Amino acid sequence: MGVRKRKLTKEASPNIHMTKKCPECFAYLPLSVKVCTSCGKQVGPVNKLGHAEKLPNVMGYVTAVAAILAFIVFVWWGFFTEP
Ligand SMILES: [Zn+2]
Image: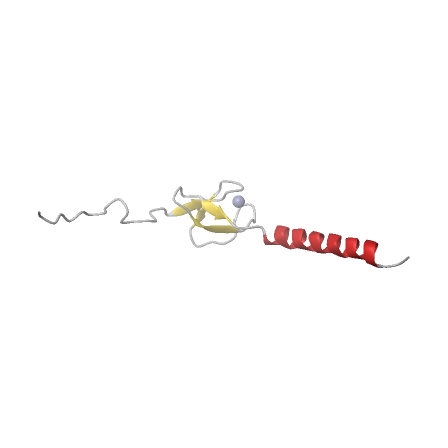
């Protein structure tokens, strides 16, 4: 039984892209930029398809958490405080 060496040439270069595409406006951007120069949206690192990854919307999460907390406070206030 001989040991075969298999070369993983396909997986050798994970990032062959020189530019990334803005997910919002599809402008081509340098890999290093974090904010789209065309539409001003924040862009993540390049993915396999050459597109910039969308960053999670932090403000959206903050707003959702704030809304949930406000609802909890509202329910608490409605049930546990005497008029
Ligand atoms: Zn853009």
